[in-house]
Picture 1 (cartoon, helix red, strand yellow):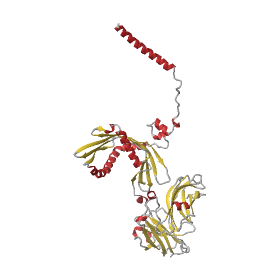
Picture 2 (cartoon, one colour; picture 1 turned 90 degrees about the vertical axis):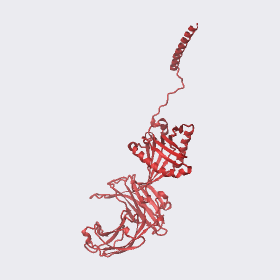
Picture 3 (tube, one colour; picture 1 turned 45 degrees about the horizontal axis):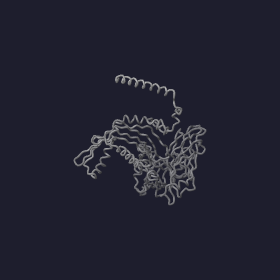
Picture 4 (cartoon, one colour; picture 1 turned 180 degrees about the vertical axis):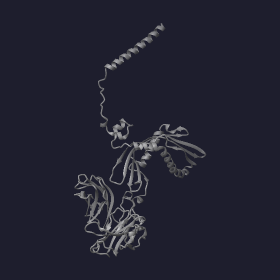
Length: 538
């Protein structure tokens, strides 16, 4: 009886299971719940960047956010260079850490701390995208998204009281969004003076930490505590607007800032040779410092005089007295045609004794080639008085970006006056009807200064600086800035045309000391020009 009961039990269990599966299948197929709706399907382009980040966390940022650019070339560069960068970075880290460790270990009665192994592994960081900001200042701002899943082997041995303990860092992961700012941009390689690094958000840092073979991060609660502690410490030091500054160049050397003033007094010329067929010549003198983009200074024209006297004084800003020289050119003024050269000479500034006036009588030469036989011909003499006045150490100011103050005007500036500095940076979208070879003229109180010509360029860059020494602040004056184009082609009906102009009220620069703005050009369709103005006082 027991045997038949067992057989029947197994049969009943099998029939029940089979019947239940069949009934459940038909109920699932034919009796769907009415409250279930089809999912709403939306194109990815309609999603914002935050939603895409949650939906597709491993998609590069340049795909999800149009503000970020693809930088595969950097990743390829790192891939090839990483074995060498690894060694260089580790060596630099050892050299930086060694003096710090030697200074700190006596405080904790530790005998020694040594790196037994130090390598960042074979996997380089990956740039998921990069964002670049354009500003009106002399700086370059970049925001790369960096992901680094590394396999480093960093083993540190600590020796104390005759015992030795080793700590090993493995399986490092770092996700960071830094802001890298290169400023100020300078005309000396590598073209920036400082690197500023800030973090735009708290970084994600994950790693394994082994002590005597055991993984400390596996201890309950320790992993999260250490991770949050590192995040907070790093954020406190470098989370924007705080930053890490890495000096690259000495800005004073990179910018070649003014270090003194050359006072030039053009006294007279003697025994000049006439250039005109009828009557005497009409001489004047042009003065210019080498390695200086500023326009030349000119004396007045002395009519029909081969022994003219000027007694005119000029101040010229000196940036490097060891390499700069004063060029003096004497010309014969002509009402029509090109002015004739009467002679020239050069005075190296290193031959001048600081703060001591020196009267010099210079033989006029055809050129500065000592082997040119034409220089033996007499062309007359030019007499000048030169005084080089170097600034005192406390008068040589730093850049505006460093001190947030402008450099002072030289001591020769009149009391109550100052120096108006006009820096012509660049223009955009300037175009002429017949030609586009733009240059800029700056007109102030009847004195006109001009930049160099840039040929066939709708977006020219000049980066030229002009100075005006004034007896009083120009609170009621305006600066006339005009962009023009000229062509040297013979027979052209329109050899010169204006591309736009702007009149700038100078009362703002007197009150603010510095203005750096982009102005829309009048009489230009889309033209703009960037002008920086500074008002410097003693």
